[in-house]
Image 1 (cartoon, rainbow, N blue to C red):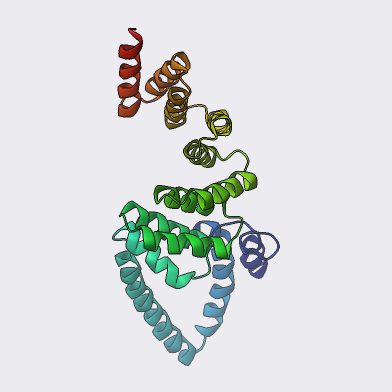
Image 2 (cartoon, helix red, strand yellow; image 1 turned 45 degrees about the vertical axis):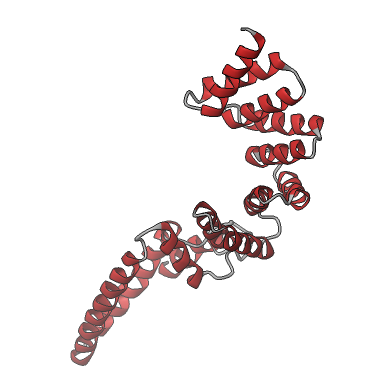
Length: 248
């Protein structure tokens, strides 16, 4: 029974029979831990019946407690900040695409775009269908003006996950940069379709309507963005400018 409780709950999270997409963590191993205890306790009970076994058992338990206390202190130090935590995770799971993607995001947030790009590309190499990494890399290199590659990456991201709202919005900004206005409008509409409360998508849609001289639609888009996010500075500014221009 102990062996069954140890092994069976572990199987769904082991990625052996099907991919679950996350690192095996303690939260999915609680039942397995019970099975481990059920196996360990009878062994301890059998050893404690012998004099020598009792001494060996006492020494072993003491050593384990000291070892795990030291390991706890070491592991707690790795939770100082996100950067240190994800970097330490890389040493444990060097082939995990999610870890590389998370480190890439942290590097991008700190303005270290070149290093972030390397981590995003490694995440995609490890998992070519990782839509989040494709989106993050596409968004990153878009800021560097590499629109052609960014467009290809973002198109792949939304192809993999059709309801990927952020991917559609980022793809829309690339399409708009290429002056593919009809395609950009469709992308923004898809972003709003899959995330109804998406002020940035409405803001970008309003900017697109300005380029198309559709003032009424642009004002409506900016008003929606403001209603969804009252402190959206860009939407307030563009809305005010359009109202002043139109005499509204």
